[in-house]
Length: 568
Image 1 (cartoon, one colour):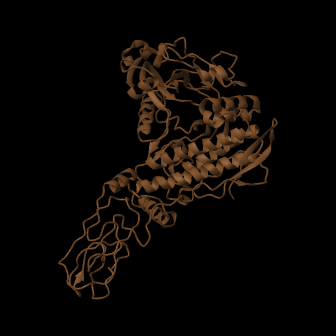
Image 2 (spheres, rainbow, N blue to C red):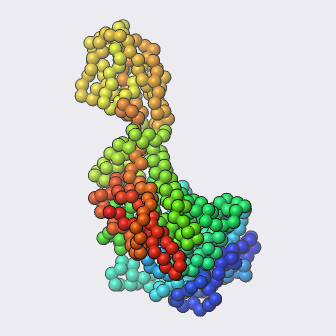
Image 3 (tube, rainbow, N blue to C red):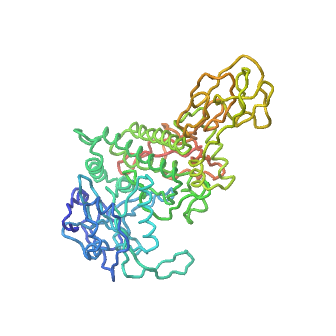
C-alpha cells in the first residue's frame, strides 16, 4: 500500500476557517485557523531512518521505505491528491510574556490518516517557510532532526505521552546555522523529520483567538477539538459551558500525567512555552531538551534560560500549572463563569499530587504510598541526592537491583528469650534461634553499635514480613506490614527488606501546586510570577510557592479573561 492508498480524512482543514490568502510570506493571519502552503522541493532526498511501528500504525507496509515516492513525500517533494498541506496559526506565552502570533514556522502538516479508527496527523518539520516563519527559513538541520526522531520514539517506549516520529530524511541541501550562537554560522546538512500525533493543536491555538477577541473562531476551534479528539466528553450533549468545563479539567489531568512522567525519567523539556503545550497532554516540540544526570532540580538544557532557569527540571510542574491558567484565560469567553475553570485547576493539582506520589513510591519499590510515613523518606532522599552529585537514573537502577542480606543464625538455645531486641533502623524481626541467656545476640538489625544480650524472661512475639522461623525473602515492596507470633522460644531481629522504622515509610507529595483559590482583585497584566531561585526549590522537583489564584480581569474586545494573581 502506498501513501495515496491510505484513508485521508483532513478534518482540521475541512471544518475550520482557512486563511483566504495563499501568499507564502511572513504576515499576520486573522480569522483563520491555518494557511495552506506547499513544501519546498529539495535537492537529493535520502531516507535515513523509519519507525516500523509507526509505519504499521498508519497502515503502511515495512517495504514502503524502499519506495522512492515515499521518500519524496516524506521530504515534501511529492504531495498526493488526498493530502492538504497547511500550517497552523497560533500564539503563545514565551518565557512568561505574551508573544502574539507565532504559528507553524517550519512545520507543514500533510493531512490526517485514519487507520483502525485512529487518527494520525502527519507533519513535516523542516519542509520550508510558511506565513508564520517570521524571519526564519522554515528549514531544519540534521542534528536537530536526529534528536527529535530519536527522542520522541525513546520517550514513547519509556511510557511518556508524546508525539511520534515516522521518518527521518536528508534533503540533499545545506542549511546555514549558527550552532554555538557565537556569530559564526556555518552550512550544515538539511533534514526533514515526519512526526505523527492524533493532533498538533496547542494551548496557543486557543490563545491567539482569545487575544484578538475572535470568540466565534475560538468557539469553532473548541467545538471541533471536542468532537474530534474528546468525543467521550460530548456524548449526546451539545458543546456548551458545562462541556467546556469538563474538557478543560480533562486537559488539566492529561497535562498532569505528562509532567509526572517527565519527572519520573528526569526529562527536561527546556522550552515550556504555551505554544509548546499539546491540548492532548503529549510531549511536543523537542528542542533544547535533556535528561538529568546528577540530580539537580535547578538544571535546564536551554542555554538561553540559564540566567533565570524558568524551565528548569524542578519548576516543570508549576510551569504546567501556569500554562493551564493561560489556557483557562483563553477559554473563559466560552464559559463566562470562573467556577468550572477553578474546578479544572484543582483537578490538575489533585491529579499531579496523586500521580507524583504513586510514581515515587514505584521508583522506590514501595507497595503503596503512606503520606504520613513516607514524606520524610523521600524529602531526605531528594535532599541528599544533589549534595552527593548522584546520578538520578543510576541511583534508582541500583536501588531496583539491590538485594537483602541474609541474617546470620547461631546455635539454638535451651532457654526462652524475651521479646526480640530491635534497632532504631528496623522494627521487623523473623524467628530464628539465638544463643543461651547471656550470650551476645548478633545479626542484621540487632544492634549497629554492639551486641545486645538475650536474657531469660517471658517469651515474646516477633513481627516480621515473612513466615516465622525463616529469614526474610519477600521481594522489595511486596508487603507493607504484617505480624506473626514467634513459634520458637528464641528470636533475633532481622533487617526488614525496606529497613522500615516504627512505621513503614514511603514518598512525599511535596509542596505540589496549591489548589487554585478565588480572588476578587482585578488585574490587567499577563506577566508571570518571578522565578523561584534554585535555593528555594523543593528537592522533590516541585517549587515552593504561595496559593495560585484565578481571577477575573477586565475586558478586552468584549471577552472577559481569567488570570493568575502574582504570589505575595
